[in-house]
Length: 280
Image (cartoon, rainbow, N blue to C red; front, side, top):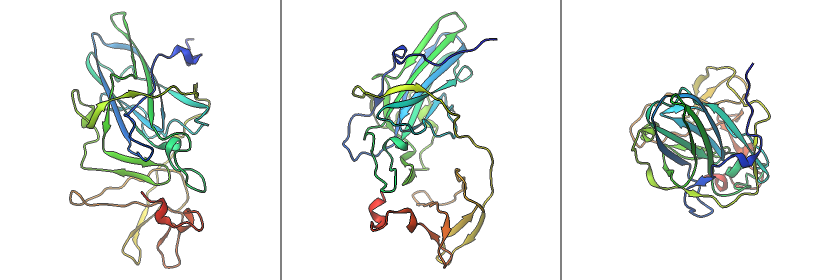
């Protein structure tokens, strides 16, 4: 029976950690990075070895390879970062192909702990990708992250595990993956300074969707809508929104209600520190 291994030693990788040009320690933008390649023949076997400093998604020709999983998982990022491997054989086609990666704060730069301190491991996001493609004509192509990639902004404006995401739904979330499409604030990617941390293979299963629940909706005395799923769980809420362009919708998560029937979020913030101090 055939089998394959992960990359056995880090020096087998030739890809570089890349990011946007440095914009200061208070920069909290989610980043979109992309590159294009032309293949002379169909792909018969493709593997993508990818990771990020922050949570990321990998796209090939508008296909979201990572899906809803939050990767990489938390590790001591100052020591090691896990990489993921994806079978991308069917995602590539003969001709022009677009590869994209979107990355947000995650547990690398995002707020963590009882004090909600952010940037514990660094203040610059980064991505890493090495994609190995075996073609029907017998040739092999390797695509790596380097300074030839471009970087800019997209629909997700900021993304923090405690402060949440800010998104602009007026921006098409797939248009940037079209050939020759230009990102907002597009510029050339830059190589990150050398890192002491090492890349290691995943050693536990990823968190995956196991069920779907429907929430019941009611209106609180304040007029805000409360969506109750009936239990505590880890998940992602999917809502259908209607409104005029430029309208702002705020979705907050919580576990308990106040005696008046409002969502109670005060317990989420460190005692003695005002909630406004932790809002962005």
